Image (cartoon, rainbow, N blue to C red; front, side):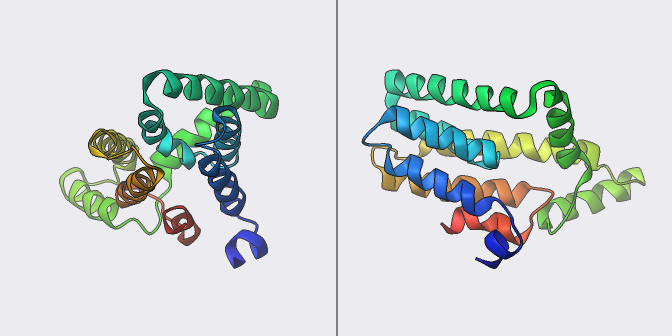
Length: 180
């Protein structure tokens, strides 16, 4: 509560929008897509759940959900950032190639790499860990039972856990997503 209100981290808003998307999942695909894309525009990490939601809705409805979500998200990006989309891309790359905080697995790999190379190889390790995380999340999605929203939420918890396990930066308030 303190992190989301007193320290003004936007996880609280993104989580509220994500919960609205989940609550509308069985009622209105358009409303669920709108809330999901809004959550993704506030914080990018709800996008981790896209593969699970696509599997939940099966092929035709899943593609419909994906198209609506992408249209709203990209529309919001263009309205919000306009010509600064390149700056957004550079910020994301900076995050994965330069930032490190509270990241156990990364710290271990970094020290092993430093022993071999003599320098901090975050520029290579960060994106590699992100790719490993993404592939693991896709594998979890393929193996998850997603016929119910309960199964989707179990897959979401595991996906977020994998993402944070391999992340180079983990601030305490990031953990709010899997906790909820």
